[in-house]
Length: 313
Image 1 (cartoon, rainbow, N blue to C red):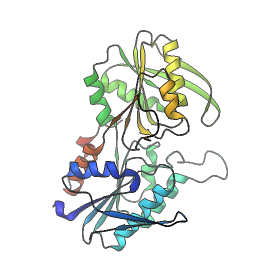
Image 2 (spheres, helix red, strand yellow; image 1 turned 60 degrees about the horizontal axis):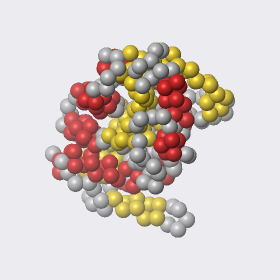
Image 3 (cartoon, helix red, strand yellow; image 1 turned 90 degrees about the vertical axis):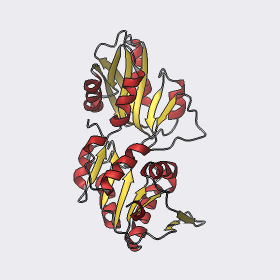
Image 4 (tube, rainbow, N blue to C red; image 1 turned 180 degrees about the horizontal axis):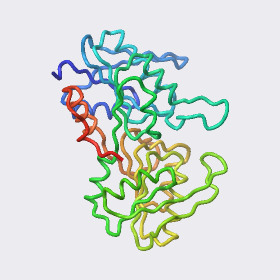
């Protein structure tokens, strides 16, 4: 059955795509991207996909070229007579724009969904959406996986004494509480107030962290301002150490240096977004998602249930 499956990867997720292909048991397909001097690009699939299930691996973090490349690859596979096109989007970009939070703004997540559907995708597999209700924007099946499948067993194996899970803000309370229940530990919450986006005005800790080893949990780390401030607050309130687990390492601006200079013991992330090689990474540990996506893909192709492959939060 594997000879009827072709796994391709966009340029920003090439390494992860190769890992997923290995986990699935086939070689990754050949994609060539022609780039013009003005910045325009044209991806082409360099082998036949006629009548096959085509799996395209691409995260859609900035720049928007990554999203456009995914759309072009989906369109190319459709026009090459692929039987079914599945987009594996480990990181679903524009997910923070899931509603109108003020007048005269777009709902970017819905627009991305419309673009994917118009391009010809038949199914989407993603991980830790910033807003889970985005699944409802689709008119095609969506498999929403959780990085807790990887992180919870890892935390158990680490056997951290006096462990307590924490949310870096109130929006992450549900996620942190789920981890706390799965691990059988207590929960703490950081309450923050902002004047403008990406700029924290004040922060307080809800819960007892005295003598505890804290693990902060979030779906993504962008500027790292919240995480670094939360780590400081935890230590000021009596915590012994602070680690952080974030699925998507967006890490924009000076985030790498902030983490390097912070009180965090380590930051654990998935490989949904590749780290920047020219930035300090001493405190960052990457956990591969390739086997998880490969296993889910196997069950999908064989029309088996995938519910056993992830821990819902």
